[in-house]
Length: 113
Image (cartoon, one colour):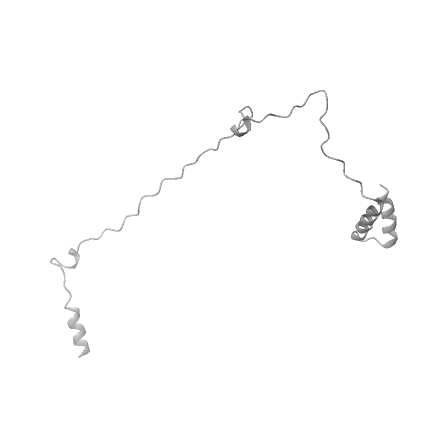
């Protein structure tokens, strides 16, 4: 009985006039057009002889005369004391793996420089 009902359903399909081969053809979807390529802009390269930016045009440069050297702005650093130099030299010798006798000789020579 089940075989008969399945066979009846398969005959119930409707075909367009002219048969199965006369069906309309559905075209494939068309891809959207490609986007335009990005604009490539060359950056402006500043020239050596170009005027300075507007923000810097109203500033007055410092006066430097050619016959006298400019004043020293930076002070000379204070030399570490002898004890600080010895401690640094002992630490360096220990970091290099020197034994105590080598470390003493190295620290004397290093601290007196």
